[in-house]
Amino acid sequence: MNKLLKILLVIIMLATVNTAYAHVQVRDELVDKTLAGKTFTKPDPHLEYNYQDTDRVEIPLQITEKISTAGKYATYEGKRLEFIVAGNVYYKGKLILPLGTKITARVEILTTKGISGIPGEIFLTDFEIPGIKSSQIMEPISKRGQNRTLWILPLKWALTPLPPLGSFTNIIFGGDGVLKPKHTLKLYYYPNWI
Amino acid sequence: MKKTLTILAIILIGTVSFAVDDATLKKEQSCQNYINEIGVKILNANKIDKHIVFTYDKGEYKKTINDPAITKRQIIFYNEYFKYIDNDDEMAAFLAHQISRAAKSYSGEWGGLVSSAQIKFAPKKYEIFADKRAVDYMVNAGYNPIGLITFLNKSKPQNVMDKMLFHNPASKRMAIIYEYIYMNYPYYLANNPYFENINYQNFLLNSVENRAKLKEKIETGSTEKVKYE
Image (tube, rainbow over all chains, first blue to last red; front, side):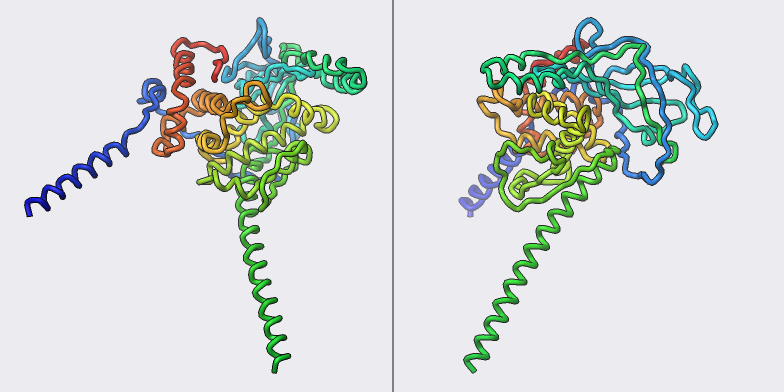
């Protein structure tokens, strides 16, 4: 009987140790140290929509400060930028956004320029426009640098019979994505979308 | 009598064969519907106004030069991918990545022909782009973007030649996705149901060095790109 109890005790101890090991976890120190205790709102998914209406209004936008994908004016992902509306915006004769209205947006993704003439590109999203819901805006919008692939591709094909000249075209880079205050971006607003 | 039996046997064999075909068809339809449901939800939630289709293929993936996601805007889901998918988030992760490539192939000159060529020329650059965009797509459609990390952790091998060839190392992709979620959607890290998931735990284990680099970036307030391994 005593022996049986001892065996039982050993089994229970082993099971406890095993369970303890099963709960050992790698902690995410970064989250523990930098996010713990902070409250974040769960992003709202966009699951209610009705795209039957085709009315759309163009909102011309100009940035207030020059930005680029690289160099002196390089920006970074997540940065909020300021824009102004570059002209009065009307819908059915009613002024909905006067010239000079301030708007903000976030740099969503930056792609740097690459070989074979691939341009850098700036993607903008999360536009905050007075009186307009984000579900009614077609975003993101983007600004690309010079797309040199357009002439590099034909050149590459033309030079392919003369190796290795065709391959040399690979080293030509595209232009940086640059957004200056004089550039006008078009953002489309669908007033009857929900 | 013999003749009657033979006819009966033929009829029975025919019925069985129809039954099998019917079951197979229903299974394929069910897979196709599941893929469509999640894929189209992502398209609609993200207002992607381009035509993209989803096709279930019961065969196995074979590497070819043709990439239907960017040449035909057709996203093919091979049956073998189910091995790596445990929930809707992970299915959404696969589809969202492919959708972002397909949508990108529509942009620019010549009806997107140049963009498609660029995606082929610079697959590494656009792979990262598609991962980041996939995170946005998943969040907008109500899926947890951590699913993209667990999906990659299970399915993408860390090829020794990746640095020199056409894809980014899986560890680098996961680190960039993690940073993107941290910066833009911290809610999902602060309230993380995947913390108990063994694949996520494995990611935490194999990304210790990369996350230390991110920690340094955050602590120093740097805006420079982190060089992940």
